[in-house]
Length: 110
Image (cartoon, rainbow, N blue to C red):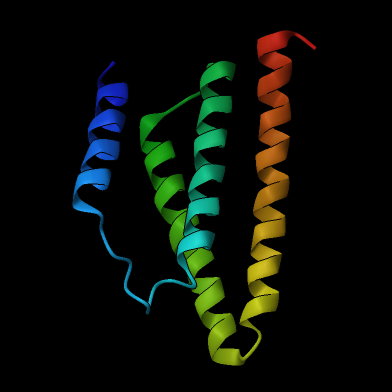
């Protein structure tokens, strides 16, 4: 219940405050969101499998976001930012869909 309340408060605060993303971090935000979604789906899968550990989730969440952003940053510095961004999205997308399939199998027994 606390998580749902926090989500509602966060959405309302975002709509009221309307934060502006600095242009420096704009290229990294979509990658960070995809990395965060990967951690969330992994955490949900772990919860359904009965092996969820909150510390592991927090570390996974933060490290996924930081590593994905660093890969894209390094790609930008090397001049291949678009290719590395695509690679990160593909890898994390595969992980997200694999976790979603496991969640679907667990929930629907199919």
